[in-house]
Length: 442
Image (cartoon, rainbow, N blue to C red; front, top):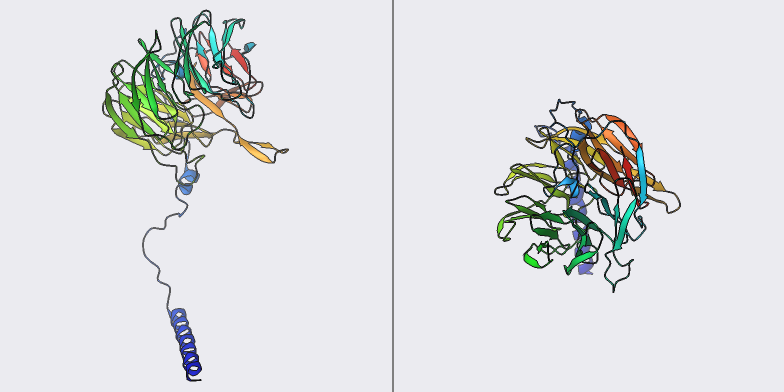
């Protein structure tokens, strides 16, 4: 009986204390702290208040280029300013093989010489097409023991009479550019879906397991390798190496960027591009999607989750960081850096500090009512040609923009939508469609 009375007293005491505390709290005045009020949504207020600026720009003079040998035109992933007419009309549409499907994708940009345009379809078939649109030759680079539907992805590069193809089957294959005959193939022990890079007598490849390879261009034998941190996640395609006479810049799926001597492979410096855009990002994958671009004494590189950086090529020192995700290589020109970010915006950044000068929203999502889902449109580019920025998109249009203000100045229809970055050579614009066609405009 005593225990029950004590327990009851304790309970009543606790209730009384709680009521007293509540009454005291109600009687206190709210304390309003002094200082500036900041929006808890991070960068949202800044984005809302952003105003585009039509800042004057001095572009390099346009010149006629006869080739486009790598992604963005060259081993450094930079080409100055190709000549391209303003009133573009279709020249031809050539079949290159398998287009995009649910399991297989086209990831290779066309490469161009004076004699042919080379493409890689969704089922690892390389096709050479003449400048008039006629088929020259076709060759599958799938290993004899593998099924064509087991893998897709890859990239192309060409120099002289050697055409290189990387594949999702984990190989680099060298073909005779004139006939398509196989010269050699090298096993990478991992998917090699990023585009290869050729400089001098070496071919440079980044495999998706975080290793960099330097191969003898004549024989395919391994000259040297470098290893980054093994990745835990990445995506099909990926960024390839940028190489000049002094530096080989390798991007890895973990966000690491490594610089090495091109010939011996001795490591010179390394850094990591990490971080996500505050508020909103298309992905949290740290994979480098924007191939390194060497521009003088700088290297530009970006990841998919919200960071683009400018680095000093001599030592990897950080010049600036922009909170933008990159879906491909940037295009530096006239004191500006042009890019498409992961949210589907075309941007012009100030090359001095990475701040945005203007941004243009590109089409966002395509709704599939049958599957009750939305698919984000893919945007490829930009490239600068004929005094305007050119972006090819999977929604079925090539868009052309004024680099000064970002104003849309023209469009071209693409049957089936784009599956590659646009390229320009000999005054002709080429793009690969999702249907598996090479389209030419002049």
